[in-house]
Length: 552
Image (cartoon, rainbow, N blue to C red; front, side, top):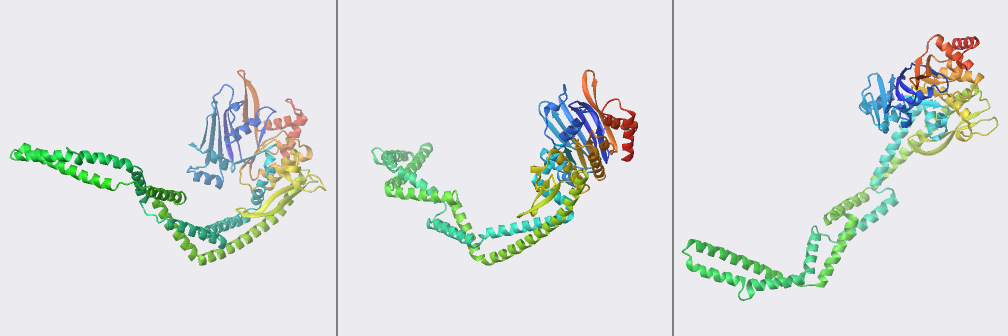
């Protein structure tokens, strides 16, 4: 439940800490005093869209801290999943500065904004004049019904989820074996085609590089022949030539072999001579093998095009294509040898499908039985709220099995006797929706996972006997859930156990809103003020207020 709320520089509030108790907490005060600001501040802290215009005039930042105690297991699990400790208090702190920067912390540690909703939706629920629109969303109806029914539904839903997962795994195995018979044949045909296409190419690892090198060489053959001829002429064929000159120098120097320095130079010249001769022999061989063959160039070009075509389909390199070939050969072999396995998987899938159908039918049966009780309770609540001519029904349609079963649930409503029920959003007015929301909350007392419900003037437009019934409903809900309520209806306020007065004052030329707990005669006076609607209350109003409080 919400233990305290500290608000700083939020709209008209400069700095206030408000303590809340379990049960029914009522916010009192004149219109415009700032009661809704407190609700807006709590909503901001719990993840509502931030608005810089709410920062108090003249301040650079607003901050709201909400302290929750005795939180439920779901909230504790969310904190544990995020590795945050819980020692009896859960403190959510949110700030927003004038430059638009914001921060969010839980128990002093930065908290991911995307996880805030999952945490706060198990802590508090806002129910104002416009919050009943949640009832209009048919996507919420099944979860509301399931919460009402409780454990039996959750147990069956767990079975559905397990069976869906089991079916998914079987489908995955079947897919790996090519699927059903027609899919398998299509896959086998494709694999055979791919294997033949690759094998017919007779690819050899490393050949692409060799082909490109050969293609480049043949493309330059004419120029190579010309250059090599000139080089060989200078090195060995013309007179004088490089080899001839080296040979003559070597021979001349051999006459002075007794002189070490000269003989050393002779040896070096001799080495050069043999090195050049080796170069000449190599170049001569290359020259003799250098011939331009257009047909070979065409063959190489065609071969490279084939490799390029295969690489687009099966792998970027020849090596990758050959690896893919081995992979699809193994896949084809598995397909051809997997008939028995596929048959077993087919039988397993049929068994799981049958079991899933049975569990979904059982779940639907439980839901329909629970829906009858739910309908009766809602109708009883609506009757007590002076909506006796209305009719409420839970409509079921079958859908494909999913994690919630095979039921598509929608709430139907008729506002007047004799009219057909229609979708809730098509028939219920704003006032009817407010009372419907209260009826739902009362029926769901003790079943809803939230521990704090905020009612913001849900009694607007309601008076007399209906207001008394509404007060009873709120009082009943507060036995199971903490209620924070803004009301202008005396009989509703009288049912509260804790009272907080919100006042607007002018201090040093600035308007501020303050909040303080009421006790004793102050409570009587404020409820009397609701009765009289004036600052100066009559003794009659005071006596009536005391009577209401005594009856509560």
